[in-house]
Length: 252
Ligand SMILES: [Zn+2]
Image (cartoon, rainbow, N blue to C red; front, side, top):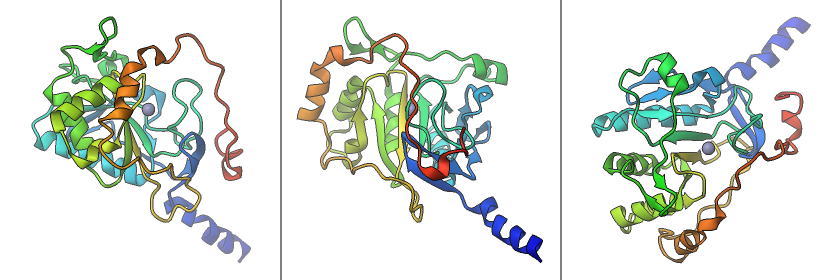
């Protein structure tokens, strides 16, 4: 009898996915892996096993892949999502902890995208840092990809390089989704999609809503003027945030 009660208590953990905590201090339960490839996308650097996300994010990425294919764009390259249980990465970005963040590269896929090539693939920078302008790699397919990614209700915000935000403002004028594109240094070869907390995830900490408007005016100008604000090179101490209680022991 006790055994059966135990089983009944354990069963829901098989199906209830959950994002716990904040994007930069949290974990996830019952994450789903994004398949290695599908219509309109490839997962890159799959050997890092950072391709797990909450079901709404996995659905979103697969939907976006289909839209990419329908638009006749080259398949997108999906890089880091989160680890199976979430939590802080040992290296690299601070967020991506709750299975609601995903990085998408801006370069097109290699010609023969086999597993080995997709694991060793190199990023392509879209910014000419010497003259602080976008280079010839940033073209219409890149603009279209970012526009498709932003036009989805599930998206809370997308981090892009300030010069890329500026180019999107020029191309799309007054589109209401432009406000979701948040200028942030370091996003010159990829953009970073962040979804809202899934409905019903009571322990998922949302981020403040993006300010109203397109964000193409004064706010962007301040980023563009601050060219020296790039992330300093060199190693940073490992990021060890205080995790919610439910994540302690789960991710480490
Ligand atoms: Zn990211």
